[in-house]
Amino acid sequence: MTTPVPGIRPMAAVHLREALEAAANGKPATALAALMHIDPHSWTAIETRLNGLGTDLLDALALANRTGGTPR
Image (cartoon, rainbow, N blue to C red; front, side, top):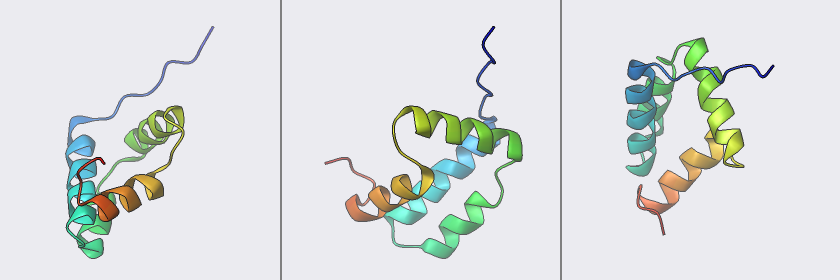
């Protein structure tokens, strides 16, 4: 039996989006503040989903910063 993948809580999704937007706008302190609001349950889900994509949070933040949030 497989273990279900935990879900990302709605407010955590908002905080993650805010962090990515802040990184895209060159505001690392704002990105960090948004990330600090994410609950542990959602962190697990975020890490699981990013690992499934072959990346991690630092890479996602760096990509947002490099591209201004626009995929290239």
